Image 1 (tube, rainbow, N blue to C red):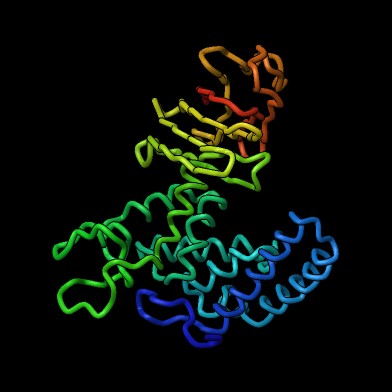
Image 2: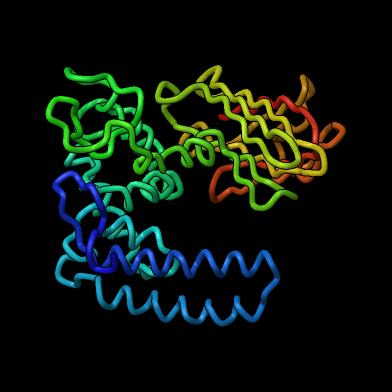
Length: 323
């Protein structure tokens, strides 16, 4: 399959095959490094980290287009795959490549790639400060989009299609196909915010939109061998979020509250109807005002405008206020 299929099922049915295959190889090597690190196989970590860096440098040198300042032809898929790989796009070029991708999506009005590039697209946008754009793409109902499959003049589908334009009349592709379903992982990790990181200390970090009307409620559950992890959050106002979580026994979690207001900061945090922290007028000391069983380690990331706490197993209801 090497150098053959490329980013399969793109909108215009074309994609650079060599970059797509190279992306898959680097991604597999990077996954293997992370697996080796979790298993404490330090020799493999060192060996394959060196290999990955060599491959990353080669990837950039081969596919970066110095005339256009993008990867290959500057299509959405090519820039997405390059940006999604760690340490491939040099820091000095990353902003330009990312801006080219964002401008292409906004100008085009939709995603143009296929099953390979759609998987990293939504996480990339959420991580890089364009979560609102990711939400708008996910909620779009015009062709080509997920919403178009479920809102069109021919068939309001109940399952995802094999192709963006698969239709029941004269269709040559499946009307019940899993290969575009990678967006589901984004639902759990970035909308609900559940990131397992193993099963000892997990992360709960729902991404928020500055526009509360784009998404104001999420409820999700992930069943693990230790029990169910449950998350439910709602935006009660532009500057307030309610977050209820359930963490199973023998597990703890880092719970992070995303910024609700651009250039804003958290001013008060409540847990189970008690105020556990409030920003002082004279200082910004991150210290819990009240001991709540299982809640500790309050921290603020001023660069990302987030506040986080560590919680033990149990059930908690938080309310975070932003200003």
